Image 1 (cartoon, helix red, strand yellow):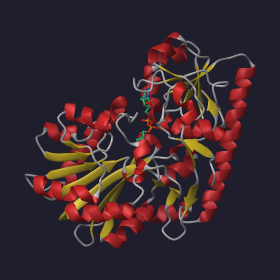
Image 2: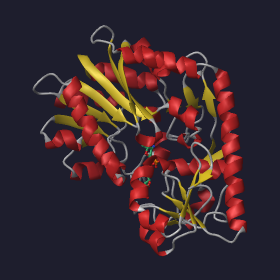
Image 3: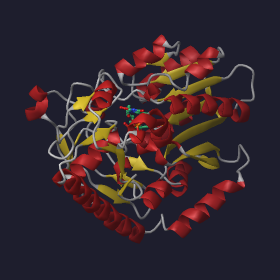
Image 4: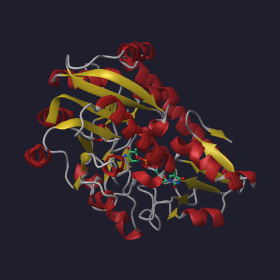
Length: 391
Ligand code: DWN
């Protein structure tokens, strides 16, 4: 597939930076041999993850609750000694590890983006500002020892070299330790046509089949998987070294389900492409129709996902006046590529549009509760996942 020229999804910028904006070709592809769905060009990681990274995991209250439960679940199911050590890859602002830190559990976050890592430290989370590179492994072993659990949330799919991740994990995980990660799920993306999950940071959209194929050559096997309703449909994968732990029936059931869904067949992705093109055409037609009636449209939440929607569909400030977002670092800037102004949530309340297009559709329940007044006063919502509709 070719989604065309794309800017950095979280590259919110000022007017002075427009002329230097970086673009790459967003080319999603499917590998018939390992069944990975991936993009085949990714910008250098340093262009995406740095000292002014724009996404803070704490921006959703529901996600704070989710990570509290995720950490409890790890403790209850996968920690069986009294002095465990937990590592999180891509620990962002410490939303997950804070729950271990509060319980005085030995932990370490590895987070390359310095600004979000600083917020984690302010929350009492031990954090290394580094990529998960082999050069840091000896320091971790010397200072903390081997890990009982290595975990990640919405991070594994961001790392291009999965083989080196698996090799590095092998060097610092205890023999009976577990690797637990969750990411947006390929089955959900295909079923919902949620093409906005595809952007520079998401090199891969995983399935149980592809996760098994990637980690098996490194001595790991999938022992459990648990569906998550976060981020529009995610999957939590639990892996252990082969033969070390019981494999839950759900693993093979899910792999059978994925085969029924055709996640291992190229034809599925041809259909997905056609569905994406249909949603793009429907969305542009709807926005143009609303504008032609003299009504106003604003975006709700300047998500990373919205960068794909706006640039793939060619939707700019002529159709969407502004995008409201609660993250201070994004406000006052412009959206990547199509340069729609980003405003605060207060601005949204003071300048209510006739229609709000919900870019954070994955946080819909939370947002609908917060925006009862807007909806009651006649404000309409535009959705584009699983198909284009107005509510
Ligand atoms: O993997 C990733 C996921 C987990 O998070 C990333 N690579 C980066 C990020 O993706 P995203 O930007 O699409 O995430 P969200 O959580 O869908 O969007 C968050 C944005 O929405 C923030 O900028 C805050 C904003 N927001 C808002 O303005 N009002 C969020 C909520 C819940 C709200 O009520």
